[in-house]
Image 1 (cartoon, one colour):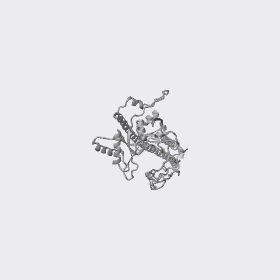
Image 2 (cartoon, rainbow, N blue to C red; image 1 turned 60 degrees about the horizontal axis):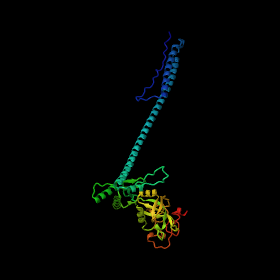
Image 3 (cartoon, one colour; image 1 turned 90 degrees about the horizontal axis):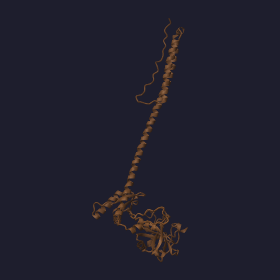
Image 4 (tube, rainbow, N blue to C red; image 1 turned 120 degrees about the horizontal axis):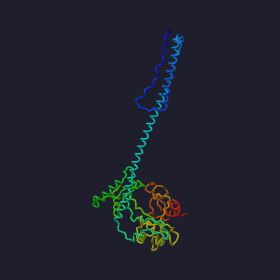
Length: 422
């Protein structure tokens, strides 16, 4: 009997153990694992079939057959290792994709955190704006309650009149009360000095007023920053007496660099005004004109400016009147007339025309102001250095911007007032 043929074969292929960390395999990894299992089953089936069908006479050369079988087994083992390497590569790719996904999730969480911070900041700003609006409404309500009761004639006079044939819309009546502000500018404080905050100004004013009035519970109505200029702080006052006290305390008790700005004025334009009622024989605005106009119109006129050309002898012209109350300006514009010298001129909204900016220290057309100018002082009348135009004794005027025979601040300057010389 022939010797028994012993066929050596590799151990069945076994898939690698999964790591302890649960990783969801991708479709590529599942397909590769399925192919590896099919290859291992096919290899065992072929080996078993070959061993069963070998003839007895071919079993003599055992070493040669064994070498052939070993070679076949090596080939199958090489294929298995290649498939295993491919599976490991796919597994590594799956881990890399998982890591990228985790990084994307972490980045998204960070973005959500930043959005949450922005929402909190926005909510804080909205709260501050609502608080400021509430304080202003309280001020208006307080002024309306403390003010004198208006008669029916006063209310009728404040109601705007419309043409009889125009009944489409009704304009809202002007607000009969005006909020009084004491505005403080801290932009001129030195960099080494501490900026005056709204809280510091509030504390200073309240302490001074409490000591003067012997009232330990007195408080400012509101102290806020100007939304258009962060270097300006506004103290909201309940009435005119409180407004005067706040201005006096701010002028005397705050830092020397702090400035108390003048009160806001509300201009209106008045046309068809009698020339002799406003100008004197030298074509200058009368000194007592503000008191006269205030008495004639039952209002408070701060100042006026003549708009028409003064060297043209016309009986009537135009002027701009600056009022202290916004409601009064609205009233005159709605009524359409303003009394001057016993005659009524027509009113309308005053439209400002921007002109070049001038430094009143060097008299040049520049972007800086007088307190920022580092040049020598120049007279605005005779164009000489070393004195102010109020103390000038020169006889021949000279304009620095255009070189004409007039003052540097005159309306005859073509560079400062180009619209009047078109």
